[in-house]
Image (cartoon, rainbow, N blue to C red; front, side, top):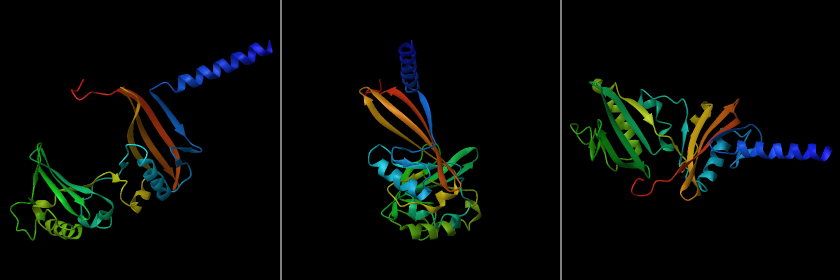
Length: 227
């Protein structure tokens, strides 16, 4: 009778575990580690762990949840070295007006400006002289000085400044320590044509990683025809 009872318990545990791992599912990790991300780590330590994970998975950026748009260039000065692009954004007569400035090797690589269909441009704003407008190949420092000058003009006061998600190929941004939640997503191939998607939230408390919330789901891959 005891053997039958133990067998029943083992079977129940097996099917219970199997059910928990059937996609989609959500797991909350409060002890140990997941993908090398260790509970109890500091934000700087977690960032290094994410950089290691990025070499194993299709993971390039991490979002800083709760970070709001900036209203002054001076708020961005110390943060610019840690990011690949910034966006200037405002609503003009009900339409979204935005300018995206991308950097490569600490210089402006491209500029995209416009409303619903923004286009690449060599210069923005186009009506200003070159010494005042953003130009391709401007250094980050030149761009920043021009940005400060632009904000001295009343017509540019309504633009908000938005940082991109944190790129993992650049060093840790110390300002990330001021936020208690980060997020990222990566895709992995389970078996063709099925892909697994991991949506992850990292929750910090008192300066340490407190928990990892992982939502996992699976989806069919689309072929090149879109099917």
